[in-house]
Image (cartoon, rainbow, N blue to C red):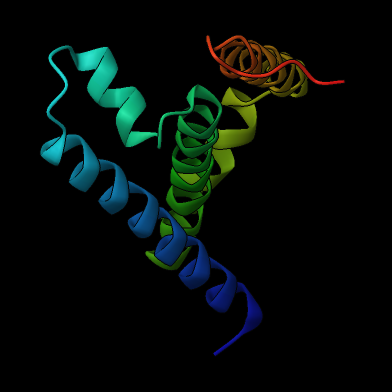
Length: 117
């Protein structure tokens, strides 16, 4: 077993765990709205919810590229760089950071949280 395969196997295990935990908590939630159920599945934190979404998307793109290489379809793996141009990746990174900060601010602004001193 080479290192690349081990890395992708670990990545798959993490994604399966994240998706399973989300689905399990979402299904068991007693919240009345979809958003409340979704936040509950993110363990009450929009920041965690966003991080798990980013994990799933990044692993999905990486897994697609790896699977295409393993199955002998290098054309798929070669197309990804043309779709994910460097300027798009930079914009995506900035977007992820902005959403993460907004999610964290939401968590910090919850009523009843004592002020930091």
